[in-house]
Image (cartoon, rainbow over all chains, first blue to last red; front, side, top):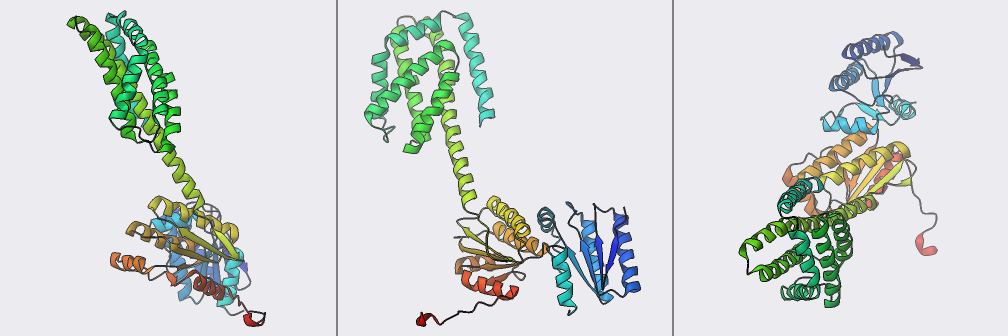
Length: 118
Length: 302
């Protein structure tokens, strides 16, 4: 199932509904990169509240998205990570060093507002 | 424990039944003998317990009363071949004597003493007929060993149950996550951390980040006497996992000893935000959250 991407003002909001296959993760990356150019977005929020597992490929894809977004002049923030997912990720050594995170969508929006100076 | 002891106990039962199958009259005769000599043997046993310096935590009256109950249960178990009643008794006995500081070696010691006392009396009774004595012992020994095993295992199991219960109680008591301001929680850790407790603590913290919508977490480890590399790495993981959920972690109260340990172990603490004491940590957290605490009046004018 493709990940829906909503445009909300200057931001794009991608809500991941279920565990992504590798090709879905690549599809999400390409979609986001295409839209960031089309809408001249300044921030991306990836909401993973619904995910209760995250494999290393999905984690790497999210990190790649964050890095690519940065190169295109926007910020990415990953929101809504479940406690179990967070714990499993650090145990696998996936600490998302350089990816911004926030508790939920609301916090993510507040973070981007602060970053973009609103 | 329970599973490993059962085959042994059952094996004992098999031996008992095969031997007594050949000498089905011997065991009842033996039981009758033990009943008849009850008073004398019981006293002999209590005397030897005192002599051996066992059960010093109990008065001699108590020792004698317990000895009577154990003796009767013992003979009954020999008679019926069923250790269920004895198991029950061993459990309740353990419950009573563990809080008084009775040690495992004492319990094992008294049961083995009883076995010896009874065996001696059998030697005495059957000394004229060596063949018969051997057959009596064939019937007696497996049953006696099985009883000793049952009592000892019962005691150890009860002890382990108490230890487990206490560990759980300590764990539940010692990991509160407290909200002190909106979006700020503190986690004061008291007592030694092992990796199991550290893991439980992490899980509890991550859950409460979600329920309290925490943005800053202050972990205070003033009450932790020492730390090893596993636990230190676990703390680092806790910091990382909290960040993944969008919360900042401040660690406070790192003692000089713990700081030295961490540096010596080479734990990577570059990502950890450490502040000297809990007060400083809360002040730093308030700063991060944009709170400003102002005293309404200078304290000396109150």
